[in-house]
Length: 426
Ligand code: GLU
Image (cartoon, rainbow, N blue to C red; front, side, top):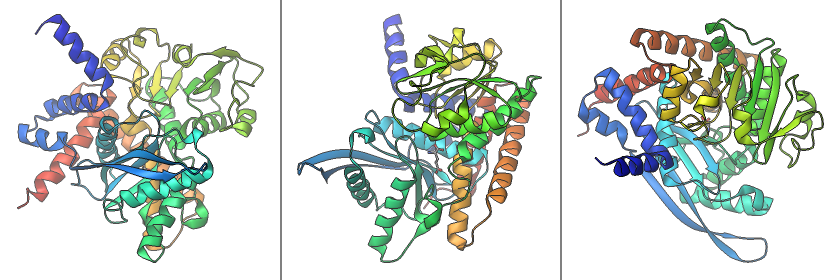
């Protein structure tokens, strides 16, 4: 193969989240000595749907939007995964995210398989009515795939509890009765779970604590930089601050702020979600999203988009520990560089699993119509995260691999085992 061809291939891979997901699966398959036919089965999404649908806009015009829903491997249970509203979302990205959901659910041992959905749109440029129309029509279009026994959506980038409420209502209207268990991440008033909103951030805080202990440090007093101030970034900032860590930097799509002495997180949380909230903060230096990643800190939490830590900037990362709040923020090339430099990376399929763990609790509560106190939810979540973290560390040590491969070995092995035990139909 020529250099140009290699470079072209690398370029395609960098652009394709799905190519990265396959590369990660191939590495795990190598350690597990998996049969080639099993790898073929696990590589492919089981089913994927693209929908193009019209939405009535406020000015009376009609706009056609494109959406996706992908199921990866169904071996371990109903499909589960969020719905992303983002102008740059693609079917390729949705495939990768669905596969990552499969491994994530298997790593933390909850009885789901992976799914993901998305609509190509910028929710910030839609009115509340347009957002509701778009959601109800998208859900109707993908209704052949979703249901409390088959596929349970949840929030992801650009969606929130209100969107989940419209999903529950739309599905229920079609059925003729209320079906709370069709979607998770709903408001508590309609069958949502206590603790779901902060669950991903809580899980991240638990694993950050464990990871720092592993490198002989502690969360109390640790300097934390967080990229992203959406649901995950803001809950992480809140809970890290509460745990005694010093949040020194935070950002949103427009950029970030940095103060080595720590930011006033309670005051920032007051305006979280509002445009310009971060930029209006006085007592800090303005930084770009790229600069934020390279700031001096103990823990770096990339909690925005995928592919932000690459072979271009991995050498300059100063954190001792990276906790992946987003899905796929560190590329495989960057992983290798970070590992060599001794930076501990807690991989997404473990680090941000708190969200789907509490989604599972929400689904169980909805199916039983019996709801738990917030303490019970949080305690069960923290226990699940700690147990999964220890399991990943042990597996990584036994196989002499990094934590990402440790997590992949557990996840892929569990899914391969379930696939083998069930057998190939017919
Ligand atoms: N979108 C979240 C994730 O990537 C949550 C999925 C869920 O709760 O089903 O893990």
